[in-house]
Image (cartoon, rainbow over all chains, first blue to last red; front, side):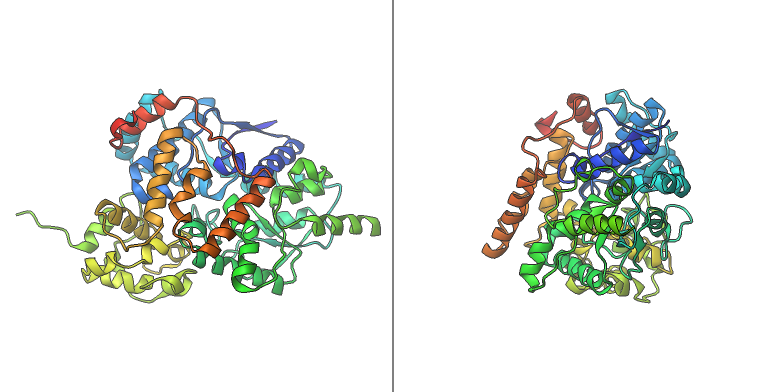
Length: 295
Length: 187
């Protein structure tokens, strides 16, 4: 069984609990163990970086150093956490002066960063570490003909981490195809959800999400799949406010990719946290039910 | 003789971890402005802002809402043909404006960020209810009720925390932060 140091991040404790539940359920089926990092702290979202860059790196480095201590690669399900951890690790490895400064602070918690731990996003574990063939072999309830948008959002891909294709990625589509779904060719799959602007610049963020939802409707999608709690909250929890603000009538379910993977594995919806949406995912469940009866 | 860095150099110096080129390498092509999903809400587009930084128009730059509108989506950064890390430059300007305490009146961003950091220093984890007062009072009545309605629905679905979470080794954690920034009476 492959093990990872699991960094859930603050969102997965409550507002995105369903992402946590479905991540644990689905990885278990894939013979992957997500061992929660003991005493992890907040990655800083974007706010630390607005205030003090060195502090931001130190707070991320504490988590990296703890993963190093247990000798496991770190996995973050949230794209924001992932981006912060990834670049902290990269910058500290490249800049010994920065690492020395950060390590001086980490001494207070008896920790040390040396850069031995790789940082991965949860979707990378599915696509690259486990692999699509393995996932396919576990699918007992393919989500046949379900039109799913692979919504990448920003920070899985940007800023560029290595030499990956940041303009036309296909790995999310590949994952959706592996579970039998029909990935929608969605022109805004890389467009930002607004992130924390939903709080600091409400109208801007609501407008951005409205454009995403309108485009999803135009593409005749049944559901949007995300790999980030921030995207899920902005696209789903604020749909009603968007409808009130702009007079629209959106009713577009937005779920985590792990929830769809879990359904295709035949895991009961409740154990995947389905039912805690503000925009009901029932149409998705009935579609799957119907397609099962037809086949 | 020591020379004082100009504004563009000052901003570039705030980007010490970034590997991009200095702002002076901007060719004013406008790819950033064309890419930016928030450009329509900015006083100055990113392209214009960079030109003004390079022209040394510090007060005009700091008076704009542009960098506090940035959602950090890094779309401009990956597309810039001059390889300038524009999103990081926006971060640098946010830090600079907070450090100088010089930013457009009425923005929620600076207060939100400061409250967020203080919250983490106190508990090590994020807790949404602490953040609400940073923005909710700036809302009009209609927005206030919309937000309250969303929060209530989230609460009913068990998606909002009741008690603030905190990490276990909080004393060590605060001393660690104390080695980076002054914490006053928090340690």
